[in-house]
Image (tube, rainbow, N blue to C red; front, top):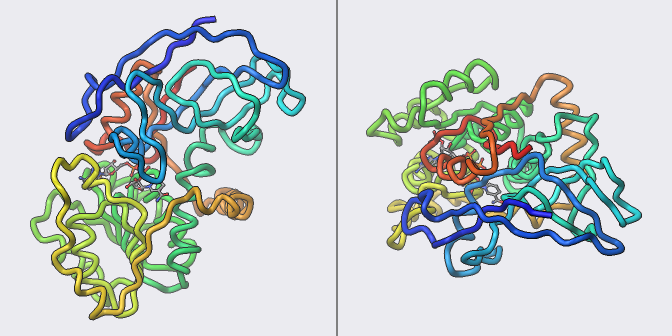
Length: 333
Ligand code: NDP
């Protein structure tokens, strides 16, 4: 059978553009014993994919030119010769950016469609939700009553960080780049203050004004000027959770360090990066806790949905323009 897939045709220089991607047909042969065939329904686009478009491997291997891209996806098993997966099962896999894929089951997780809308397993109950949970619980060891600053606060990870911290009775300050996002955060998440970083020339001043007693935890999704501001305003013995630095992903020159990095010493700051994949052992505890919070209306989520596999590159590119509110998804079928 024929399957459409999106391949990387060239490595982006600076911001990715549609010319870096192309839709291609491929032939999928019959499944062998032990295999099953999945039709994708949803796929995720994530900022980390930009790193995989560079030629050098980092903590994940680089995407190859003229090969299909990969990433989180949810689909339905439509044919199976594997005893653990039956026709009609909903599964979570890592072969997004295509219509169909075959598998022997390695790295594929069955999803319970009765627990939540299936695409939630790419967001609030999936990788991005787990990232928020791990960053706050395992990296920051967040204590009730702390003041937390989170950048990209209306995004997939950020919006969950805000609500998990509020559920722990923390004071939460966020940053976002659009009025619509700020309104959503204020209406839906219980956030205490939001800074529109695109409308200020003094991020440090705004942060200090909104956090008169300083901040205890900075959950960094952005890096650059946001990290620098956080280092200035963070309290002694504060913690910077280094989750992501999206402001640097399209840089064509080496990134200057925060000019005030010495604050790490002066203030005895703990700064720790993490990769969510190292914490998959936390998945069950995370899903248990998150489903409870969702049922108690303490966590809500938002999805930005792009229709059609052919529009997946645009959805990905939009992450860097701030097009998405909440989790950016692509509906494939
Ligand atoms: P988001 O849903 O937050 O989407 C990206 C958002 O980032 C945009 O909507 C935009 O919002 C903001 N943004 C884009 N460019 C800039 C910029 N130059 N300066 C400031 N803000 C910018 O994505 P995710 O929630 O999926 O990811 C958030 C971060 O977490 C990323 O850095 C990602 O790499 C990281 N991450 C790390 C993981 C880990 O294991 N360490 C796992 C998953 C994600 P706005 O309108 O507010 O500008």
